[in-house]
Length: 211
Ligand code: MN
Image (cartoon, rainbow, N blue to C red):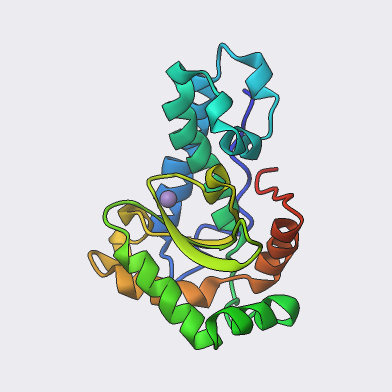
């Protein structure tokens, strides 16, 4: 198989109580695994594409044969987004970033609290399933944006280095319809050290989320 489910960097119960064990189990062993399987299925007859990093597939979606493009967009996106998501979280995490990222957030949003407020509001405003992201945009500036479904900002030329899953499967078993509570709880599990590493990659336009 070309693509594989990456190991979860912590135990299924490690992010309790903010993300409960059943949510993590269904999300990782159910949803993420299915995205990987369906991406492999879509690319079964395309060995040249199988050799690409999954991020590359999303950067150049227009070059994917039309008959498999939607499957690659959805399942390649699902694979990349979740590989990224597991890595920007950790137990005993939270707090604030330091260094350049913190300074750049202050310059762009005024305060860390104003950034958090805008990030939560953008996640809440996504109708249906999708993601909220912090990206380096095409002008090289920090921008909060949201994408539907499993679309990744890489497909629009943006460089995502922080984000949150706002699909119902990410929070419904614990928070039910209260997406706002999920977005607030999420700050407790953010691994800012990992985010800062991805920020450097984003600035260099060299993001790598999947092993
Ligand atoms: Mn998800």
